[in-house]
Length: 197
Image 1 (cartoon, rainbow, N blue to C red):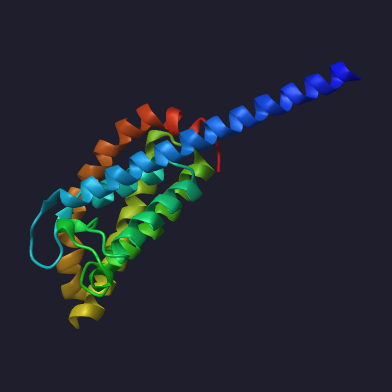
Image 2 (cartoon, rainbow, N blue to C red):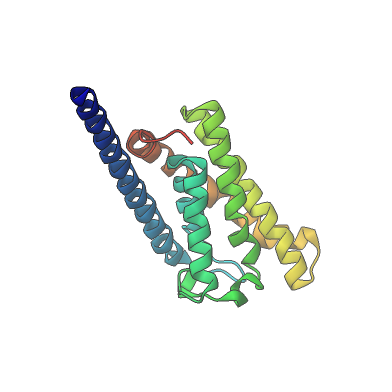
């Protein structure tokens, strides 16, 4: 009986150790990708109204490298930090006022990019064609929602908003996704080997 109890105790100890190790690894990876998101937000090409940034590059990485809910958690923390006034948005900006400006729709639709892309990858796998298609769809939705937001904020026509907030970002967006693909193929086994959610 005592041997059975000892073996059950050992089993529980090992299980707790594994759970703790997985939790530490999860927090570390999520924290690193949050840091990547913040740094990428500051790498900008200034153009009128909406700058070109590497934010969507970071969102694509997060959506492609993390399980659905982990990625969502990282994006939510990023948006909350910005909302609280931390200078994590493009050009070291922060605060609630950013959401009420022309870029607010892009920021909020990072959540859509994450959910759609990570959801499709969870369902269909991470082969290169799926990675490409899922990220393209997420990026297009991000641009579309951002453009609709611009029509509301600037009180302009949808066509004009598309010319300001959609068309100029198509080629840069595609280039970012092309760069994402080999990075994901290399890193996904490290970030996704711990859980499937």
